[in-house]
Amino acid sequence: MGDLIRRVRDVIRKERLIEPGDRVLLGVSGGIDSTTLLFVLREISRELPFTPGLAHVNHLLRGRESERDEGFVKGLADRLSLPCYVKRIDVREEARRTGKSLQHAGRDVRYGFFDAIADGHSFNKIAVAHNRDDQVETFILRIIKGTGIRGLSSIPMRRGRIIRPFLTTARAAIEVYAETHHVPFVEDSSNAKTVYERNFIRREVLPLMERVNPAVRDKVFSLLQDLTAINRTFDRKVDILLRKELRCEDEDVSIRTEALTSLDEETRYRVLVRLLQMVEPGFIPLREHIRLVEKVLCGARPNLSGILPHRVRVKKVYERLFFTKKSPPTPIKEVFPVTVGENRLDSLNLILRVTEMEGPPAELSLEGDAVFLDRDKATDLSVRTFMEGDRFVPLGMDRPVKLKDFFISSKIPREMRRNIPLLLSGKDIAWVVGHRLDERYKVTGGTKRTLKVVATLPGP
Image (cartoon, rainbow, N blue to C red; front, top):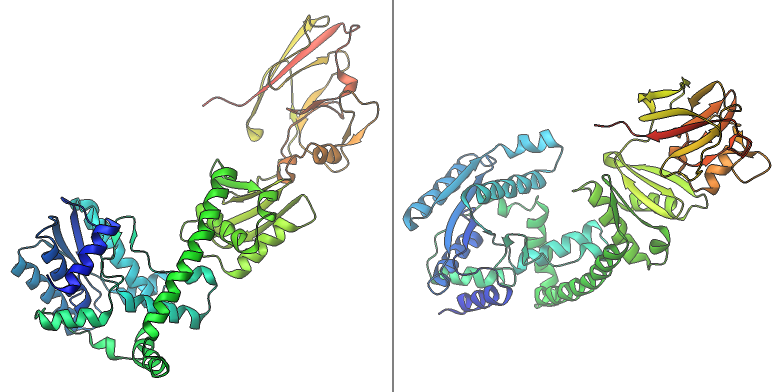
């Protein structure tokens, strides 16, 4: 068995990329990397049995050459008696439609197609032919374009059902194997065009670096492995923190502010990125986005908020930092009359059930959102929401306080305050519904008539 086959087989076994009986879909462009991977895996399948299939995307970018590539892959599949799945799509038009770069649009189309075929034809693995030189080129590209340590990690050997058996294999070894074993493939003429960034790195930058150090590819690859290990350490810290601190409620995610501010800067950055991506998958936060989040997090005021792309809002509510895509509630300014019986206040998503009884109740304790009011004091009932200057006398106190101060001391989120129902007697606030009764309207031993008011949510 050749050295390349032996090395790839050992990687597959060590990383458990392919198990006996797997169904493996290979993404094949027709180029030397993907076609050589196909022939190498066919050899390995003699002792590690699995079922392969081929998938090819014709991007319609290179005219007759694209048609040639498609025909080559179909012919290869026929020759090897393998199923072949082909997608034809105008990637240039797709990029224009989505606003993505040509490379980004092509990548999304390919992986979307591979996933669809895998789902529809029961392939549990998808093999692609990224190799060690791809990693080195990506590393240099990211340095040139600018990235933090988070962007300097190896391409993963596996992610979900995507596997990369060639990932530690040098392109030179692939080329030697293809020549020695007469592996058929087609050349993509665009690979010679240095107007493309990756080709420029491959054909111009790396050869210059090799003049300084002929082993530069090996050195970069080793550095990349070290940086990947560092990134994994930080990512483990993020995982541990989120398992302990993350709270998910009603499509929002939140975390204690203290848990964030006590972190080192790098770990906190990664936590914030992860939280944003939980709310908006695919969101790639930029540094200015994280700076905005940190401004909200570290601001002196207990209630702060900011708007990010994709309609994502970050808001600090006392001891927690929230990420959400929900719009803040619209303040309700109506006044609703309340009578004995059932009062449905749909705008407030509330039902108030009011019953009247003689004398004080035998037991003053109530469960849930309910209160007893002295009927002779509580008259002309209505419900509205917060207005500037509102005051009431909280139960147990002897003087009025500003309702705003009560909300603050009770740590009620600012955006919720304007929609909290207030039960009024005339112009007085008799009950901050669900929170506190007014001392002036409580039932005493001298009460002759009592109102029981129960607040509930409407049923389905």
